[in-house]
Amino acid sequence: MNWYKIPGVQPADEPFIKRIKAGGKSICLVNYEGKLYALSAICPHAGGDLSDGWCEHSKIVCPIHRFSYDLATGKGTEGQNDYIESYPIEIKDDGLYIGITGFWEKIKQAFR
Ligand code: FES
Image (cartoon, rainbow, N blue to C red; front, top):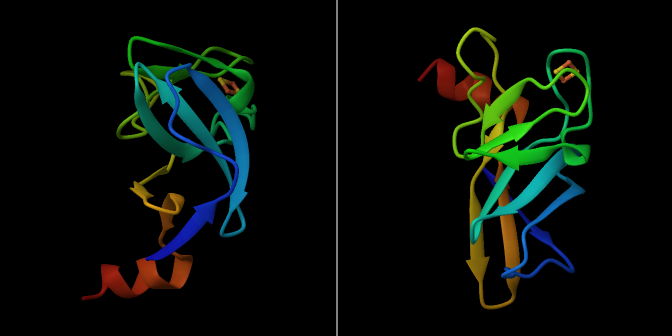
């Protein structure tokens, strides 16, 4: 897993949803009820931008057709049968980092 520093983002009291780029991925960074989450920004249903959505009941809601995904796991709501990638976050002294596992690394892990 590679860790990417996200410049200009500090943990904050104010809730936010931001679209950022890290490790070649479009990531939706969410501050919801005082906790940070990093998820894929692309809705798997039809490509909606989740960073234009909103949060309710610990889920992010896609603005296009209102599919929703658990902020912590990325799991789609029951009946959707889909998910979005979720990424670990670390807050270090020098800023915020997001951990991303590359495609080939995932393949290698699958065969261990
Ligand atoms: S594009 Fe996100 S729910 Fe359809």
